Every structure is written in C-alpha cells, then in structure tokens.
Amino acid sequence: MTDGKTEGLDKAAVFICHCSGNISEHVDIDTVKKTLKAGGVSVFDYEYLCSSQGQALIKNKILEGHLDRIVIGSCTPSKHGTLFKKCIQETGLNRAGLEIANLREQCAWVHPDRSGATDKALSLLKAKLKRLENIEPLEEIKVDITQQALVIGGGIAGITAALNLADNGISTFLVEKDSSIGGQMAKIGKIFSPDKLAEECAMCSLSPLMNEVAAHPKITLLTWTEVENLSGSAGNFTVRLKKRNRDM
Image 1 (cartoon, helix red, strand yellow):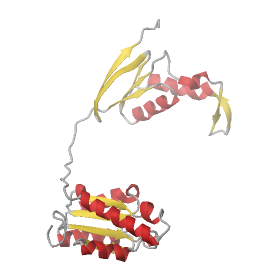
Image 2 (cartoon, one colour; image 1 turned 90 degrees about the horizontal axis):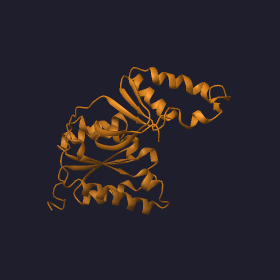
Image 3 (cartoon, rainbow, N blue to C red; image 1 turned 180 degrees about the horizontal axis):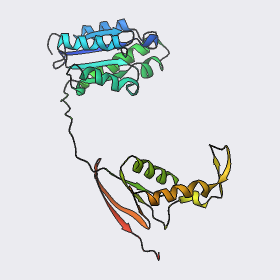
C-alpha cells in the first residue's frame, strides 16, 4: 500500500455516469465518490459519459494524470463498451486498462432501495479496480487467413448462408449428407410467403435458389458428404470430410 492506496493503482481513476438520472436517482454518487477517494482513488462523474463532452472529460483526465487504468461506471458494456474502448485508445491507453462496471442494469434498475443500490455500485467498482491491479497490455496480432467458408447442411438456411457468402466473393463449400440440397423445405407442399402474405408452392421458392447454388462459380456443392473432424481456430480451420457410399 502507498498512502492508503492499493499499489499498482496510483495511476487509476474511476468515472461515473449519471445516465440522465437512471443511475444517479438510485445510486448515491456522492457517497460512492467519497468512499473511493478515501481509499486514494481519483473519481470523476458526469451526466453523460457517452456524449462527446463526457468522452473529452475522460481523455483529458487520462492525459493530465498520465492514467493507465480506467474504470467506468455506466450502463451495460454491450451498449457503449466499444465506444469507451475507442475513447481510451485515442489517448494511447491500452484497451486492457479499461473495465466497465454496470451501474444501471445491475444496480439502479434492480435495487429498490437507494442504500442497496449504492452498496452494490461500490462493490462492483472496487471489484473492477481490483481486477486492474495485475493487468498486462493486450497486443493486437494479425493472422493470415484463407478466404474460404464451409457451410454444413443444405437446407434453406444453409443454402441462404452459402449464397450470401459466395455473393460477397468468398469461396464456399456447401456440405450436404443426402443426395440433394433442399432439406425439409423440399418435402413441404406449401409455405407462407411473407412477400405475398399468402401460401405458395415451397419448391417455387426453393428451386431457383437450388439452381443458383449449382451454378454459382464461388460455391462447391458436396452431396453425400459429412464432416468427420474439425480442428484449428478462427481463420485457420482444417476440416476432414467423409464421402458416403451412395448405396447406404
């Protein structure tokens, strides 16, 4: 510990968003700030951290204090997580130095009493600070990939996926275990057309797509075929296929 502050967090700060009252009307932000500041943590709050002014505040404080670890108390990370990552990276801060505490959905919106919401907010913010104690910078790497795709199953979903991929210039393998694509839709007499708002012949919709698959220069159709093994990672998969005996 250094001056009452956890070692490793001397360049950390917490930013709390009021979220137009969604957070501040349920969480006692002043109490949160006083408690964290008592532990030696710098704390700032703003009405809308997701606004251009809010982002400017974050950037200015990072640069002024040479901060390297940031906790943002706001709404769910799925809402503005990407925005905040971009914000801190524009200051040169590594994205590993950012943690977001969900003070809206996990505190303000689920705790009926102000005291409970405030305690929960403090708990989440302290946990995020603790998590930042031993972080290591994340490095971006580039991986050479083969612009190919494999679609398993030649039903209407597989056909649509293969055509979308192929139309975007990606060489696509469409694997179907039976003798022909079409799947269950080919066995249905009629389907409901969302375009016509009426029933129509299933094959009237399916046949053109099946013909398009067969004629598409970017699609390799493999019938009587099943996936036997899949290995590798994103961008570098290896797939072993098994060709079935047609007499089976």
